[in-house]
Length: 81
Image (tube, rainbow, N blue to C red; front, side, top):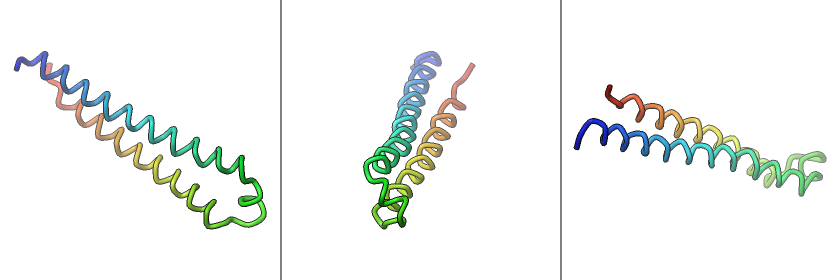
């Protein structure tokens, strides 16, 4: 396999990881936000266990998205000139 083909393969792998990171970030932000809008009393009166689970799950998804994005950046570091 030539250098150009290898670089293209690496770019595709990085794009794949980056798309996963975007999906995790969006899911980690949108799903808890939608749940909170549908159940405002569970958050405003007292923080229920279910609300805490959605919020912590969202935070975990956002942190995981940052890790996956960093993985995509590391894949791009292997590209040769």
